[in-house]
Image (cartoon, rainbow, N blue to C red; front, side, top):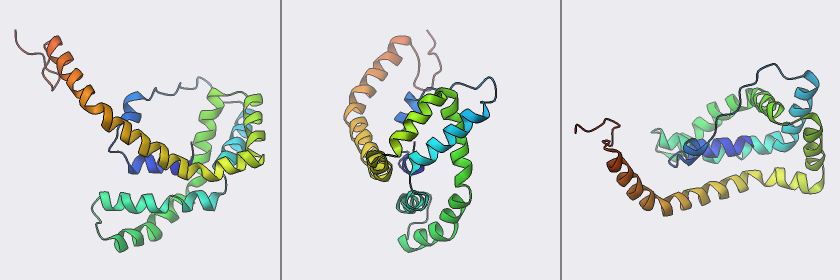
Length: 176
């Protein structure tokens, strides 16, 4: 997952489908092999593409996030993003790559990671990495649209299921 996808996801958190459907990552039982971790780190770095472009693609969503937390004036939100948010994210970017690499190393083996890295070294892979910020926004917009379209049906079915179980909407059982 690209950094921008993560940030856009956080900025557009009004749709909580990801949290509702996400399965927890398996907890590693042992520390990954250092060579596997190195391959994972290299793969993740390639998948992220150009660091400056990736971080730059996060600025606009971050302005929106500043506005969501109460800094309504666009110029003030932009100033906070440029003065505080972007320098902080830039300073800690390698930490994110390390976290992602550890996750990749728990799911993929060295040969798989090397094959993925080889793809990202191709022109198509480089283009995919460069397009990821746009693709993430498109995916999130599509997810929001989809959730809005199924929400009325889901709400009706949830209400019926809650009633069928004899539960109140707060989770407390109704007295019988």
